[in-house]
Amino acid sequence: MALDPRGAALALHRFGFGPKAGSIAALAPDPLGALLADLDAPNAGQIANASLPSSGAENRAVYENNAENLAKQKLEQKRKQAVQASLENSGVDTAMEQKAMEQKAMEQRADSPPTVPAQPKPVPLPRQIFLSEAKARYGAAVNADVGLVERLVWFWSNHFCVSFDSTVMAGAYEREAIRPHVLGRFADMLLAVESHPAMLLYLDNAQSIGPNSVAGINRDRGLNENLAREILELHTLGVRTVYAQADVTNFAKMITGWTILPTVDNPDHGGEFVFNKRMHEPAPQTLIGNTYPDAGVEQGRNVLADLARHPATARHVAVKLTRHFIADDPPPALVERLTERFLDTDGDLKELAKTLVSAPESWSPEQVKIKRPGEWIVAERRATGTQGQIDRMMGAQALLGEPLWRPPAPRGFPDDNATWLDGLALRLDSANIFAQRVATNLDPQTVLDTALGPLASEETRRTIARAESKQQALAFVVMAPEFLRR
Image (cartoon, rainbow, N blue to C red; front, side):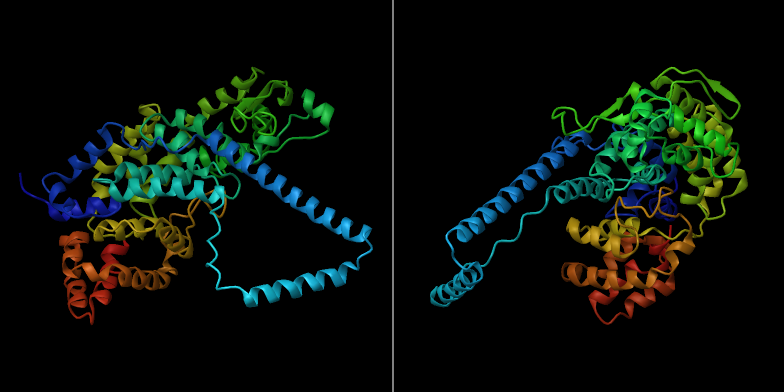
């Protein structure tokens, strides 16, 4: 079999996170076969890390931690109030007493030996959780042999995005709702994400109450349409397709009662999904011409099952996948094939991915898509064999406009080149900082061969050869057009 190192390098950049040492040679005998094998690998897309707690456990831990901190603050406030009251009752001028105490403290500091430097403040628990989840995510991408399945995880996590600003469970949500279904049925992933506590909090459905439900009548609170609207507009059918505003309202009624158990009085299961019948709108509802009887939680589940199999959903998913991996203007023929494959396989996402990577349009030699900041940062680490500190990686990604698990809106981060083109100048600064840290132990020519191999143009090779230092040469490698694009 003839080797195809150029095809291997292209496959790693377009469908993975770029090459790492030896990966171009490993894929050269059969680049497409390597991609297909990545989809068939055991436990593909999963993170086996027993130290990462469930989303509910993370939610409860943060709640308990916040409650303990609040109690400490209140005790300290009471102590100060007691001291103040004691001074006032003793007839002491509190202002003069305070001044005397400050003067005495200054004198003691002047006479005291040098103090031990203050210890750094402990990392807040939400930040600890965020770092642990991020480390697992980046690690899976940096260490992946091929990276196709990890790229699919990132794609679907952005399609069904939530924000860490809304819930500490954002990282666990990706592990629990996206990864188990990334190569399964779209209908199963859809149900998992829409009923996950992180999504219910992010899009406000946890507080949505049917106007005519028991809770709605007793508490005089009402409907929230955010989740219903985004499911129809972003997650399934697509903007301005087959639904109307009345469908949004009716669907919102059908998923009332989809909420989470309060953590304040449930230390064992607080923060987990629950269907609360008292909050559910008790009536049949119509959506896109279909009537759904009131069946409690099953009413909303039945709608999701139908939306997952709708032709508009198939086309919406096909366009987004093709735009992400292939081109801003998706090739119409490829979109049609993916749409048909989605419908023919009942939304089998592995089969959809196989169809995508096997398509002739997917192997165009021209690299037209700009890597998003997170992909580019991971590609740097893979090319240089450096893991990097998780804080620095997240900081760089945020500085470049793609803060981890903090999308600008429910539609997620954009997948078009125009969004990321203006930020390439910032990447040069990031590349210089990165190169300064790692250049000492690296040979730029070796990194170039690892990162680009046959994709490197003669102009890129000449530019790197003319670099004035190893640091500059290394920065040129990761800023080369062939490295910035996929």
